[in-house]
Image (cartoon, rainbow, N blue to C red; front, side):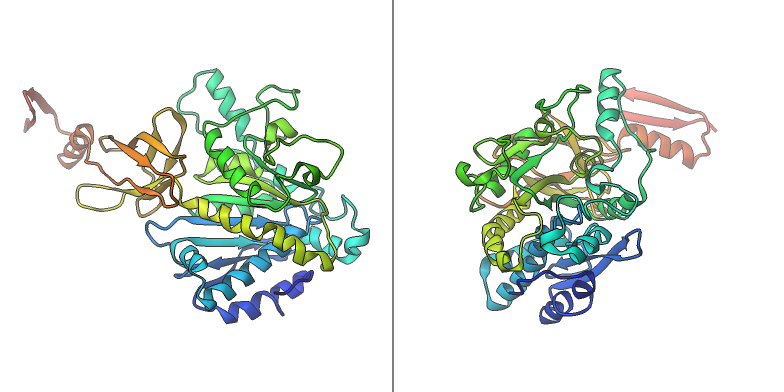
Length: 429
C-alpha cells in the first residue's frame, strides 16, 4: 500500500494510478470527465469486470473527493481504495470479487486539483483551513450547484405539477461534474470531505429562509439515515462520542450522522442537486478531523475508513431493481418508477433498467412512460444484501394507438365507437 501524498503529476503519471492500473488492466479503466479552470484533467478511475461499458442490471456507484482542495485525506483514501481493491481482487478475495463483478465503481479522487496543488505546495503544516479550499475564482464547488431546492419548494407551494426546471445557471467549475452525473446512471454516491468525523445526508438546505439547524427531511429520509449509519457505524471512531467530535461544537447525534440542513444550511449543494436532478442518492462523509494529515498518519486513517468505504459501496445493492420493457421485450428508456407513499421518482436508464434504493418492507411500485399504460405491482425488499428483482412490461396506451393511426392516415376524420370490451376505430374516406 502506497501511504503518501501524491501531487497531481504523481497521481496522473507516475507511481500510483498508472502502476496499479497496469496490475489490473482487466478490471480498471482511467478516463477524464473534463478540465479544471487551470486546465488540469479531472481523472476518474473505473473498477469493473467490464470496464468502459454499462452492463444491464448492474448498478453504478461513485466516490468523489477533493471538492475542497485542502481536504486531502479523501483524495488519498480513494487512491488507496483503488490499490486495495486491485490487490484483493488478484488475491481472490470473494467479497471484493463480488463487488467488482456486480457493481460498476467510479472513483474521482480530485474534484478541485487547482486548489489541491496550492495546499500540497504549502504542505500539511502550513495549509491551514482555507488555503486551496476554493477554486481560482473563489468558488466552493460543493456548494455551487444549481439550487433546485428552492425550485421544488416554490412549485409545491404554488401547486405547479409537474415542476421541472430545465434552465438554470451552472458555474463553469461544476459543468464537468454535472455532465458526468447526467451521463452515468449512478445509483449511490459519497463525497469525501474533511475536518470532522460525521456523515451528513440531504437535504442540505432548510425550507425556512434564515433559519439554521432546522431538520429538513427528504421523501427518502429513512433510506438516507440508513445509508449514513452504514458508513458511520463501521468507522472506527465516528460512533465513539469521546473521540468523534473534532471541535467544541457537538452537533452530531450519537450515531455519527446528521441531516445536513440541521448542521448548517447551504443552498446549491452537490448532494441536493444529485438527489433532485438525477437518480443518485448522494451523502457527504467527513472522514477525519485533520484535513491534511501527515503521511505517517495515513495508515491509521486508512484503517479507520477502510471497512466503511466497502460497506457503503455494498448498500447500492439494497432495494429493488429491474427492467421496464414493452410488449416486444425492448427496454424503455426514461420510464418513471414511482413508489407509493414516497414522493420521489427515479427513471430508467438507456436500456430500460432501473434501481430504487429502499429499506426492507413491501411496496406498491408503478412503472409508466409516455405513450404507455401504467402498471403497478407489489415488490418486497428483504434484509439481506441484494436488490429484489421487480420487472415491468407495459403496453402502448389506447390514446397513443389512436394518435398513431391518425398520423398513418394523415389525420383524416375518424369515428371512434366504444363497444363493450372493444375500442373500434373506423375511417371515413
